Image (cartoon, rainbow, N blue to C red; front, side, top):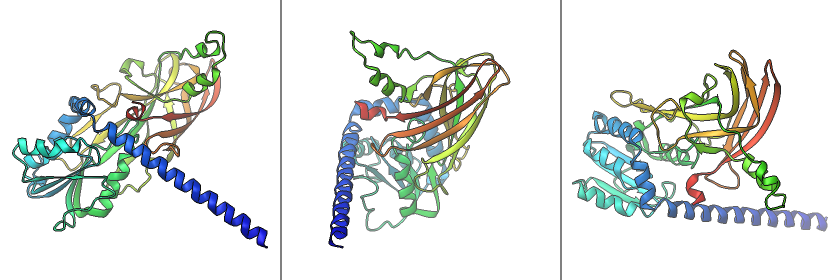
Length: 355
């Protein structure tokens, strides 16, 4: 009996130690992430995305709903979205960010004549409290989308703020999104190099490279199939941990050739904007800083028009990194030239965390 208690105590100690280690890892990852987001050049790069910024400007500045409203800007950065809201005659704008870049947001507000409207709050939205005279907000604005829509885990912060502070009739900008999958032709990954590097076998590196989802620019002429919707979001009803999902897909091939990879991209909508503003990160749409997310197949598929590539697409947040995403992709292809069943796992790292 005493031995059983001792064994239980040892297990509890190990579980407690493991939990403490994960908590410490999370704090380090967050500190590194927010340090990187404090760099001006990162925000300059984001602001130069004309497709994104035009959509936000039109959805906010030309919207009568903002007049005399209280606005919460989650992850405000330099405060540009806050300035849009203030220019739309918001009563009060609370700009929240844990990165040092928020030090510039208050100055930006003052320089543009909105110092009395915009208040900058330094910290994570999960940790801060609103001013004593504000219980609810009327609007939440946030640039929450990451690569493959979910990378960076920013959506969780928006949903936290929604549940805690958004009024019953409040709006979120943007509030809808759809994630799509398609088949593309592309480059063959030249990974054979790793088998013989100066006479040494580094195939372990090859296996690591094969498991990486790649953020790159894909053009419309690379598309080999019709697209398939794998995830749709409505931020007014979406539950937390929405990045964890499993979806069947069926891609109808449009032309003869080779399929080297699957590509994921997303559309975003501002359903409460006056003109129902939206934009797309499709390979057929104008460039955005998100580019597209590519999953290279270990076996290229020889395809003919009219054939179908079927499979299962599974996504979840990484257990090792709070800002990375993990994927399991099953592909079942029964073509005239070749039949293939593929199962591959991928990791998508937030590009900032690699700096």
